[in-house]
Amino acid sequence: MRILVTGGAGFIGSHLVDKLMEKEKSEVIVADNYFTGSKDNLKKWIGHPRFELIRHDISRPLFVEVDQIYHLACPASPIFYKYNSVKTIKTNVMGTLNMLGLAKRLRARILFTSTSEVYGDPLEHPQKETYWGNVNPIGVRSCYDEGKRMAETLMFDYHRQYGIEIRIARIFNTYGPRMNIDDGRVVSNFIAQAIRNEPLTVQLPGTQTRSFCYVSDLVDGLTQLMEGTDTGPINLGNPGEFTMNELAKAVQELINPEVQISEVENTPDDPRQRKPDITKAKEVLGWEPKVNLHEGIPLMEDDFRQRLGVPRT
Ligand SMILES: NC(=O)c1ccc[n+]([C@@H]2O[C@H](COP(=O)([O-])OP(=O)(O)OC[C@H]3O[C@@H](n4cnc5c(N)ncnc54)[C@H](O)[C@@H]3O)[C@@H](O)[C@H]2O)c1
Ligand SMILES: O=C(O)[C@H]1O[C@H](OP(=O)(O)OP(=O)(O)OC[C@H]2O[C@@H](n3ccc(=O)[nH]c3=O)[C@H](O)[C@@H]2O)[C@H](O)[C@@H](O)[C@@H]1O
Image (cartoon, rainbow, N blue to C red; front, side, top):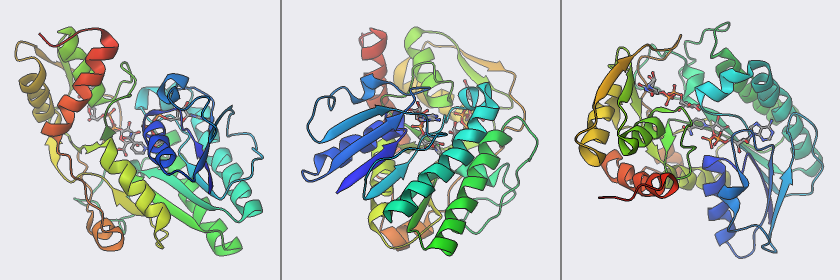
């Protein structure tokens, strides 16, 4: 089995590669342009006979011979996907077209990592896969939200028109070791701030909610979805829901009781609530997350302390 992972040098992608490489018969090819990912995340596999790393921008065609495609390439943190919004659209739309073209030529199965952001600022709570969403089509987040929605449309059209075997995961906020220290996402921000003893920046109003999934759980869900028979879309996330005020208090309590919490301005179109309904994942995949937030934060803290060079006192 030869498997392509686009975006495999990133946070989730590199954990997925670790899991795929554990299977002795798998060969893994990663294609990544290193926009937000890094070779460091894959250093233990570089030079391994079953592993190959290609510097490639997936908005251009790629010709490799594989049996399965995990298509993850796309900046995920809002600060990075907004940085070059046109590029984010090209990555989602042209990149997904290119990967579907590859899947069509090879008759390969393709899994796409979509997002809970397809639900926008949801009017239904928790969100089921049947909810069509409440998305601003012309806002600063639209390059990502609408880009992912168009990519889902492309996946289903290739499936209906050409019989391509597709899988779609709608991932909800995932965190864990190897996130970029200055990634800008809330869990990595708060953990780095707590370790550096800088105020935790809660964006107003602080009552907005998210549901945080630990990366090992998420990766299990992705491989189960790929190996199963359902096309999806399937929500993958941890239903434990927290306000940003609660998250800040949890990080303060677990990492640095002395650290201050400060309130700062928010960005436009920030969703007010988000929680996955994972009934379908449980029924179809037999999947549910195992690691809760209070167990996951210390695991991530260890990795951040090591990279920041600040040991526990
Ligand atoms: N982490 C989350 O909470 C979350 C939630 C929902 C969806 N997702 C999706 O999961 C995937 C991985 O997210 P992540 O958190 O690991 O993000 P990440 O930014 O760490 O990883 C993305 C990877 O894609 C690469 N990339 C970006 N544009 C590319 C291009 N044009 N060509 C080739 N490579 C490119 C980056 O260099 C990086 O290695 C993304 O598709 C993201 O939208 C993530
Ligand atoms: O899970 C998802 O579907 C999407 O979630 C995230 O988008 P978002 O939820 O906005 O992630 P964050 O930037 O981590 O923000 C979460 C919340 O924390 C708040 N926040 C962020 C950063 C910070 O320092 N402080 C803070 O309070 C934000 O206002 C927001 O309400 C990811 O960045 C996307 O890649 C992903 O697709």
